[in-house]
Length: 216
Image 1: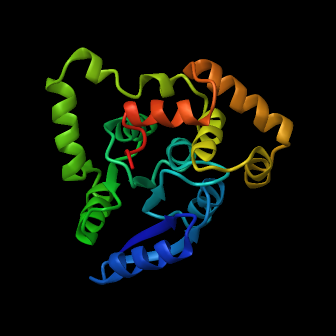
Image 2: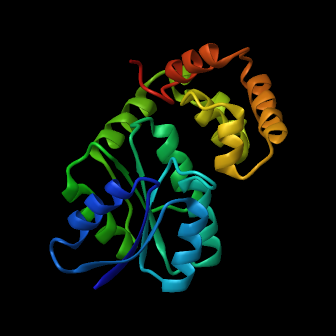
């Protein structure tokens, strides 16, 4: 039996993932979390075999949570979930120590395969990501640098900017991340300076250009 902890900030998504994972009877979901910090706590408490983590979560994102799980609970293997196919995210996940990366639009069996592979110590990437990686390798050097501007951001700056792109105000972001509005404004200002943009509209255009978010 493969013991799994699920982490996603949407309860309905966790319910669907649990159903998919437990369908064959050889995987058991032993804990659920709504953010990255809670996921780390539950992984430590359950000593789960595999942690399935959404990349975009409040408090602590899935990539940073993976980095800490790999460091503090090395017996637990990590699989990341994301709605985006940009290889930038998958590369960051692998650098953090994840063994799997699955696009949320993939069939449910893809996640099951990723969990089983990670439990066995093997890597697993969605086919869409493999195709993206191939295009990244054979493309121009400029294409290979896609996502690079966002690599300059700290974890807190990335989380703040992601929420700015979602249309959240500094006050809303501060409440979700348990920070003061002034601190959020500092992260936001630093990130905008690093990215060379002057407002949310330019930020979104830059993110689309580099494949961080898809165009409408």
